[in-house]
Amino acid sequence: TGAEDHSTNLARHTNGDVFAETSTVEDVFDDTYKEKEGPKPPRKLVWKNVVLMCLLHTGAVYGLLIIPSASILTLAFSVFCFLISALGVTAGAHRLWSHRSYKASLPLRIFLATANSMAFQNDIYEWARDHRVHHKFSETDADPHNAVRGFFFSHIGWLLVRKHPDVIEKGRKLELTDLKADKVVMFQRKYYKPSVLLMCFFVPMYIPWYFWGESLWIGYFVPGLLRYTLVLNATWLVNSAAHMWGNRPYDHGINPRENKFVTFSAIGEGYHNYHHTFPYDYATSEFGCKLNLTTCFIDTMCYLGLAKDCKSVSRELVKARAQRTGDGSHRSG
Ligand code: ST9
Ligand code: ZN
Ligand code: ZN
Image 1: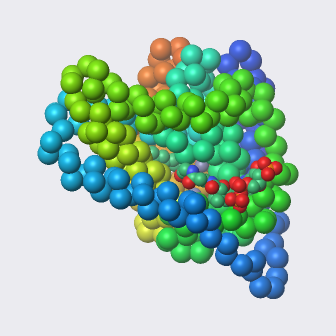
Image 2: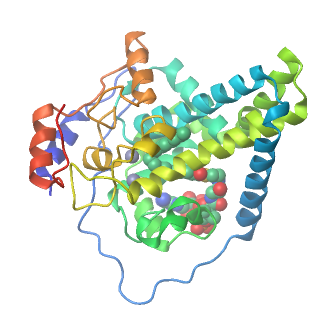
């Protein structure tokens, strides 16, 4: 399946230079893997995570309730923090580090890693490793958030139980030298805990207090916990909703779908049928910046000379693929 896409993919992953080292990225679906037969291993709950996620979501609901007592500046700042942390995931952990779909200069990588700590979604190395197994073994036992196990599991449930052994077994065999060679990634991993305390909790709480006299309490619950929880859920919707609801214009043989709502809330990451079909495209869609703030951001970085070598798929290839394997809903605009 998709041999031409695969070879394009390999051809496009050129060798590194002063920007960032790249190697062949293992984000292409591997149809040779077969799930083990027999009963599945038992589900082992991790109670600590269950309790923490309950507390977090309770804190977020409380943050929602106290919005009327927050100043307008604090609300604007919360949106700002949402966007920065979202970019740390979309432009950083996802499009740059998991897929190597463009190259980023050192200052940009430092910015993205800092923004990524604000999103507190595991360090970049772990995120990208889990994400590469997600693409390579999509919707099997070796996919960390296997959507075949239902909405709840692929949304949040997978973070509340021990991983399926195949995720770890297959993950250990992945080629991750590009991540290990990236000093920014390794630095963020080494100092992950303090960087999260600072970026995800302290900065969002402290800045409104210091600069415009907001209470620390509101700073903690609104730009802090509420914003964090919203970014988490927007991200998780890509794994749950965008693997369940929407059209499949590029490949109807896979579950990931084009979902407008997810695209909006995840600043451009809901074109998920396209993304699983062409994982190396820096725009994760064929529509450029449309509903895609992340692509806009990367384009701006290129304009400023901070990013380069964005990979994309030619219109002809997209069209041919849609005709060959799509569900018939493709409209080339
Ligand atoms: C979070 C992540 O929320 C969200 C990621 C979402 C991905 C979305 C993708 C969608 C596309 C992109 C769209 C972006 C949109 C953004 C929009 C923004 C608006 N390979 O982990 P352990 C090893 S995090 C190889 O403990 P358990 C591991 O190294 C939220 N090896 O497994 C270790 O080895 P060693 C906050 C692997 O015990 C050993 O296995 N964080 C792999 O099963 C054990 O590892 C949390 O909630 C692999 N893939 O526990 C906590 N995986 O011992 C998260 C593991 O040698 N995590 N290994 O070091 C945990 O608490 C645990 O991982 C667990 C599993 C309980 C889930
Ligand atoms: Zn996916
Ligand atoms: Zn991806």
